[in-house]
Image 1: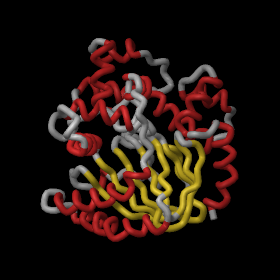
Image 2 (image 1 turned 120 degrees about the vertical axis):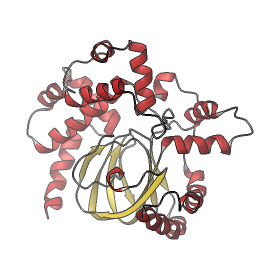
Image 3 (image 1 turned 90 degrees about the horizontal axis):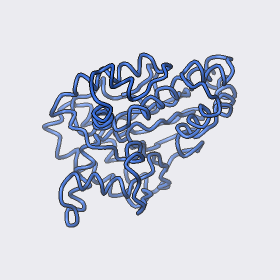
Image 4 (image 1 turned 45 degrees about the horizontal axis):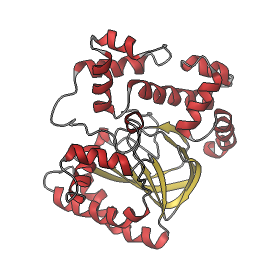
Length: 318
């Protein structure tokens, strides 16, 4: 799971939570945050204030009455306009796939069929749902109770109540989620929401997959190929690709692109180096290709991202 150390609107909850299929917390944020991605499905409800978000949907404002839906391994950054208060719900991908199966059990054969079905209809990994203040207000009591139960850290004892609250929230937002009847290719499915189910809690991640991810994180600037990665961990190319998607919801190269984009965003914000130099530093020799990859992941060109960060920097410092 990718994460930055600074407080973030899309903050990592893993360090402070017990093992549970869903976790909720409410926090206020006052500073901008670089694009970051997490290995879970995220539902972010704006309770007060406003911000500018940048992700695959481009640059979009959010305020009270809006809900942000992010698929696993989807980059998103934020720039609060003064401040923003949100309640964030993290939902394990396997947990959501299981719900898709039972929701459509009349037409699905098994959970693998549910995975295929979900990949067919949920093809947009980053969405902003404009519920409006009235509908969003309906969610607040359920969100508050979810946060309180999450803070107790007793997932077994509170499981049924938290599930009931989650279903209540999902019932309100579901009509606003964009769906598609166009079946995507197997490659596209590896980068779309929901990702492939991963049984993270019931069987250990293979050592080779952990090593492969560590290699990419430690040297994202290296000119990696799947063959190189396979040789490093002593697996075949097909094994590396399959195991990596099962573990992280992305192909090795898509995961590497995410890591490079995160590093590029940080350098654009904190240095005056040229975009060409930054692209080369993170591992892209072609600056035009780097710019396309950055825009695809973040929703902004590198130049626009740098301009936004420089314009907003005095406000954040204040």
